[in-house]
Every structure is written in structure tokens, then in C-alpha cells.
Image (tube, rainbow, N blue to C red; front, top):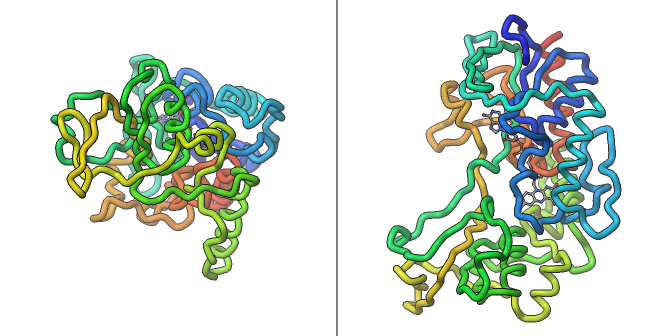
Length: 357
Ligand code: FAD
């Protein structure tokens, strides 16, 4: 267990891909650090995905700094392949990841951070000059609120807790959400259930002959524009676009997967649309995204009136020495992806190094 007596150069909260990428650069910079993760096993969010989930790009385009993800020859890698890679990555670079250690509070006295943790029923306080928060989003699934929600008598599940088609056979299901999760889950369920795929906007599919690699290329271009202070043209794709993985393509081409407008309210037996039409549903699957897991930073009072945390790159504007890594574009272009997080992790550790000199 990390030493309560020691004053670390940096404590990293979260031992998923973002925490490990930071660990790689902290190790290279010879800084003293520990990574605190509340899970029992390596893998971060990848331990909690639905069984059929695969990456939307090949292994070579899903790598953390220093070491390529081993090749996967039967299509795009599934989550077990990613988890095995993250486990091996930790071992390869001997990253000091401590599990299960949950960070409950972070405080700052103007110079040093104190980090309250629980592990095995005990509480401790650790201290550091810098803190990197890399706690991801999986623990904060977001479901929008609709009138009538409380009266709906069917069942709901968020994609965070979706575990495959069992329990959905021959049911009437609304799959809500126009991103990759919505498309993949609607495609899979449409083979066994009567599915309506409901989206706020018309979903944008990437051309069939490209995969998630093009999304990373666009994100890289966007990062270059940001660095140069120029405006990005937006390119041919954005990170929310749907990658036509084989299952999605097959469902779409066979006419089982097509998007329809969102309902405006729920009824006890289903949903109602703006034009007054209704439909009945047994189940709703919300593929409506996640929010950053930032409860441990509450005592720092760094949110503005709109609830946002101001960042310059990954650096928190309100408190020197606090960094937020891996949460999405607001903490660095494509930083919530395997290949994208490396650059923001590197820049973060450079910033920490210069603070320590
Ligand atoms: P996480 O993996 O969530 O790691 C954070 C860790 O911190 C977790 O172990 C968490 O339990 C722990 N933690 C949280 N709070 C605390 C606390 N207070 N104290 C201690 N520990 C804490 N990316 C790609 O690159 N390619 C893809 O194809 C792809 N597909 C995706 C498909 C889906 C459906 C989803 C949801 C995401 C996908 N992603 C993909 C995105 C991305 O890779 C993941 O969201 C990624 O897991 C984020 O990594 P992270 O390290 O930031 O967070």
C-alpha cells in the first residue's frame, strides 16, 4: 500500500487506460507516484462492457504509449483482448497500481494535496504535490429524463448494464441513442426482438470501407489545428460517427436497423411522439452516454456556475497541480480513446515535470 508518510510527486486516481498512460510517462520522468484504482482487477471500464462489444478499429490503432496492443486476427479486438493488454501493460512497465483503493476526497491547502482513500475497510490519507484524476465515466451512466418516465411499467437498462440479448427475446424494445453503442445494441437486439431505434438526430454512418482509424485521424487533425490556433474544417467525420462494424452493417443492409425520431414522453405501456402517435414497449435500452466520475473532487469546489470544470489542456484552471485526463475532448482531443490518451498523458507529465523543477 502507498506510504501515508511519503510526499509523492504525483498521485494518479484511476487505473484504467488513462491512468496507465500517465503512469508510463511518470515512470519515464523518474517521478515518485502511485496509481489508485477502486477495482479488484486491471482493465478499467473494459471490465464492464457488454459481452459482444468489440473495438471499432484494429489492435494497432488501439495502443497506449510505448507498446503496441498485440495483434488480434479474428476481426476487431473484443474487450477481453483489451483487458489482457492493459494487465500486461501494467506488468511490463511495473506500474505501481494499488487495488482496490477508492479515493473518496481530495483536498488542497494551497501547496500540497491530501487524498483520502479507503481500502479493505481502512481509511488513509496520502499526500502529493500533484494529482491526476483519471477516473473515466463508466460509473456514471446518464439517462435523460422524459415526462411520464416514472409511470412507465416496462423495464429500463442503460448500456452500462446491458449484458446481451438474453431477456430480450420476442420483446418490444426501444433502443435510445444515435451513437456507436445505440447502433451496435440495436443491431444485435433486432435479430431476436422487435426493435425501434430512436435517435435525437439522424445518425451519421462512416463509409463502409473505413473503420475507427479515420476518427482518430480527424481527432489528430483537430489537435493540430488547436495547437496552431487555427480553425478545424471538421473533416469527413467526428468521434461520434457510427462505424459500420460487420454486425451493424448486416442489420442495416437487411433493413432491421434504421433510425427513427425520439419520442417526446413515456406512457405506462410505451411512448408517445410529438405528432400524438404512440407505441408499446416492454423494455427501453438507454444508450445515452456517460458523465465524468468526479465526485471525489467535490470538496475542491472547482465547478463553475454551469457545473463545468475549466481546463487548459488537462490542467485544472482553478487549482495548480490538478490535472484531468481521459474524460473526452474537453480534456484533449480523443483523450477518451486508447490511442488518443497517450498525447494528453505525455503533455500532463511534462507539465508536472516543469512544476517540480
Ligand atoms: P476507465 O477505463 O473507466 O478507468 C478509470 C478507472 O478509475 C476505473 O477502474 C474506475 O473504476 C476507477 N475509479 C473511478 N473512480 C475512482 C475513485 N474515486 N477512486 C479510485 N478509482 C476510481 N475507445 C477506443 O479507443 N476504441 C474503441 O473502439 C472504443 N469503444 C468504446 C465502446 C463503448 C461502448 C464505450 C463506452 C467506450 C469505448 N471506447 C473506445 C472509449 C474508451 O476507451 C473507454 O471509455 C475507456 O475505458 C476510458 O478510459 P479511462 O482510463 O479514462 O477510464
